[in-house]
Amino acid sequence: MRFEVWAPRARDVALVLGEGDRRVPMAGPDEGGTFAAEVEVPAGADYAFSLDGGPARPDPRSPWQPSGVHGPSRLVDHAAFRWTDRGWVPPPLAESVVYELHVGTFSPEGTFDGAAARLDHLVELGVGAVEVMPVAEFPGRRGWGYDGVDLWAPHSAYGGPEGFKRLVDACHGRGLAVVLDVVYNHLGPDGNYLREFGPYFTDRYATPWGEAVNFDGPDSDPVRAFVVDNACMWVRDYHVDGLRLDAVHAIVDTSAIHIVEEIAAAVHALADGVGRPAWVVAESDLNDPRVVRPAERGGYACDAQWSDDFHHALHAVLTGERDGYYADFGSLAQLAKALRQAWVYDGCHSGYRRRRHGRPPAGLAGTAFFGYLQNHDQVGNRAAGERSSALMSTGRLKIGAAVVLCAPFVPMLFQGEEWGASTPFQYFTDHRDAELGRAVSEGRRREFAAFGWQPEDVPDPQDPATFERSRLDWDERRRPPHDEVLEWHRHLVALRREVPALATEGLGPVDVRYDEDARWLVLERGPLSVVCNLASHEQAIPVAEGSVTVPPDNVVILG
Image 1: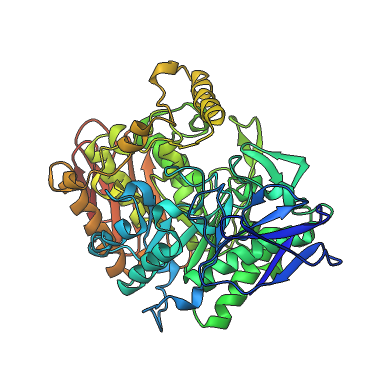
Image 2: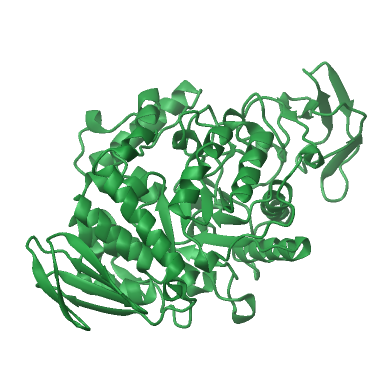
């Protein structure tokens, strides 16, 4: 077995086997700073690296961390898993409804196998793809996954590498594609040993969450390879059908080829080689069409991007909220603009930012954008993690669902949204470092104190009860009004499959009419008219055939 590690800052490196009772000096470094050793070891052996005689550290490319972020790495034979998805080809992204889920709270078990046991519900709902929040090893047993530190290792508490493979294989067996959320803009603080190995980070830039990754400074080529290889690993070894790149706007890369473009090119090339598509979906708040434009037109060539403007416009109209970034939204005119072109801010002035923001998305397909009423960020980054079901009436939930699922974008639902789940989705962590855990809890309270929240009313991320409150309550699906909301979502998803115009590749034909004073909006897509009454009284709303009377805070679909 050949072991390699890039450690240009070390004078010597030893391979530590088992429980540390055997140390093997590694040859190197070579000109690139890599150390290597050939050693006979049994399958599934534990190992680590010692730099310059220091403590054993996990492999930066560790495939499995069964003892958590501070324990040894464990070898994984990817060829040993018995896949049953031979010949699998995912449905077109443009024709799919995407379902975002968090493994730890999606099922009572909080594991990959627990999620797999609930897939029949998603099949009955009619979605075509599952977007899984980050699964790379993170500190403790519970968390969102955005503070992962072992990017190659599926979280041990969820079921490790075998468990994740079983989940992907089960999804494919039920006709569901899998998109995995990956985080390359930063790593978490706890168990982050990469800086000991090499210049993975830079102090020339900063992110809101920690050190910036060194994508364009000295010795950055191996760092870029680390990330690109990781992206390809998920597609090759775990058969995922796509990646969602977290917060690419927080990645600073002045290279001629941006790291996002390099990731997309590598993933697409790998997909071509294995004969099945693989998508790259970016989260970006820049409103920059370069993210999804082809490389030959100066773009990064991602297949789609999350569109927060559409969410903000829809949420502000339905809830009336104007705090924070919602101050830039709230009119039906803005919602109509978002429905026509995804972005409200396309170079115009943003009062919240106090500057111009965005660029026109001219020529882009509607399916270059994800559209949603809820996602983990927009729910979980509220102080109390309230879902839309806690902020609006059942009628407005139905309006929101109809607009999302009949809009020209790739629609995405957040777990439980389809039945108007009453459980919140709060921010939770499980840092074993007491000082770090205390800092996270206090930081959360300070953050929301600025919005007028009392510190005692902000859930403590470290409290296990915060996590438990966020678990879905599957039994409530059968109780009113949740059963009504679930049936409405099933009807809309089926409608999207049955009416080709709803999955069109372009932003047209999208006709949106509205009356700001009377508080109604009509969205027309092909033969369908989505007639939304946002007024507190019943009213007749004009449509092509004359008018239709719609109850207050409700929606009617014609066609």
